[in-house]
Image (cartoon, rainbow, N blue to C red):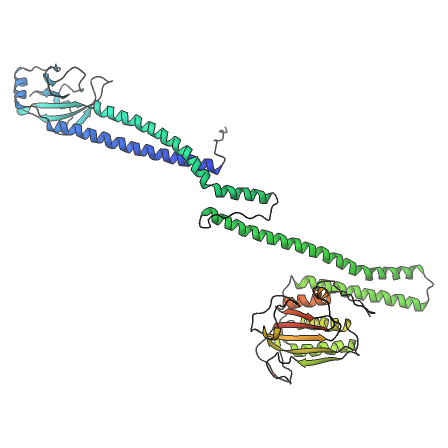
Length: 511
């Protein structure tokens, strides 16, 4: 059998008002019960005090003992107020004679004194002879010659006062409960007004208004702290959504650029392959040329895929290998490798003059920690970029040394400088490799995108081989993985200076 569900208040406001009403009602009821108990006890004590101080005179015992007969009292003897006095004779039987006004029913007393069960001089409550009447308070006084006098007072005044107070308490309880419900509802509405504003703002945010913030009235209250927590959560949510949107846009742009870059060599391979299949009588020279072009485009596509894979893994995986790397030796090897591919190019290795703070006539060994193969790829990409975008007779200078961040503009943010990563703390020693050319330089709008993927600056004049636009992006990713920084200083007609900054190990040796 399933019991029907009990109705519950739907809103927090209703619950608070109901709880406040119940608590107030319970408090009033308890106070009224305590007050009624105190008043009734006090009135009863007054009756007991009157009983204790009233004693029948000795003549009354003698007179009643002389002519009294056992039997019910006749109640025709006058006494002040509403006292009743009943006598028990020497044999323990209730005498006929008694003192007091006998108009109404008296207390229900037994016929024998042994059945009284009264302690001497201690009052006790007994019932009335009439069940509809008030109870009586009685006390037993020991008299002469073994007689007993039972003095009784009715409790009708005590019961009347208690009844009136009970009705008054009931009326007050109802009024208080109603007032608490009405005034509590108003007070709760006023108190929960900040929470209502938070609720409305949260509802609008769930409907799509993500730019809103929860109003904060008082940060020292619970609602204020809740508003601060919600605003912090909203800020993090906006940041996460912005990052997700930016990442999605970058991913789409990256996929589009990658597809565009892969389409060119793939189309060439497909075209030359179809040419070989369709023209079976092609001359050996043309066939060799087609095979050479297919191989060239396949190598180009393979390098592009390798670069894409490297970019994808650099941001997600830690450096696979770390060891102490000599930047001077690394720069010398990169220059030797580049000189083989560009024999007409003049590439010199120089010390970082006046910025290293050391010997201006010698080269210093600058050590850092990292993957030597990846750092060599960075230098190779910087040198290849300088050689690919400047005339063949333009010299390229490579400077190696140590500088302190913030000195002579090294490792700082400037409006005309393009950089990757945050600047190092001022005064921090860093290993520096500068690759400087005297070429045509870059315009500010072009320089701002040099580290973007698939970006290629358009230059007038014939180009030997267009690049993929990933060389500087790979260099930037490797540098960030090594906790370093790349900087570019350039102006149209003044050439370019790429500066690689890496954390330096203490200790240098002059050579």
